[in-house]
Image (cartoon, helix red, strand yellow):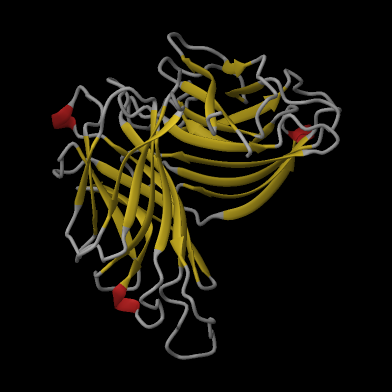
Length: 182
Length: 190
């Protein structure tokens, strides 16, 4: 069996509130996600969210994070948060917005979701994003360690979306890979 | 067919100024994984990428970084190459001993897209191989480095964007040293 398989991929052909991949096979050890996203925020960045099993806002699907995050001219700082403060989703990372940033420029994001199909334990998440443009000020970098506190359910669906409401723009992509163990 | 394939690898036997990947079509994303050291002078170095032989500007780069007990952020705008930090530099020998190489993983999503600007994200750095003595006057923390960042390539002269066909790798100056190793991976989407 191959070490890595493509589980799902979407390229948006119209502006859409988010991208969700469902019915993910539980046959792999880990998930690896890659996205390239721009949203319709009237700013150089927009806040992104991620949640699992279509269960945003549910107390039985809690998420939390600790991150080191740099914004504009500010030095990186460490912050943390929980999904109860983030509308039920993992948050704290950003996309390129649609204002004051170079046209046709999309953010880069990757995430590892470990042991995603294993119940009885929470699932750790390692996530990185970069918002860039041709300027020194309107940029962001984020490295984040997250945790999915649900222990009862395998992760079968992953969604990324614009946390504050609104749309991802045409051309945004989201790919999920299944990564095998030996 | 595998979802991730090794497109090409280079191992530097004798110091060279640069190496160049020819980028095929057929993948969704690219990833570079490098073990890197060069002969440039200074306290730290970058692995620079030149896309499609274009060096006339249009590259920007933002990052946060740490060395020793220091942390900060930085940016490079309007450059002639796509930068990523973490290169071990021979100039800091012996604080960065000869056997120490930096490491980096660089992601380039949607590299073949015809309307999106090329962007990249990386996480890289290098260790020192020796204990840090922060009480010394020679600031031995210089040289150790960790960074996360990324950037955008948008050269107006090359629009509309036609996707990546070549990636040239080099240091900011000097040569890539013997033992420098890099592999370009292609990630499929179907």
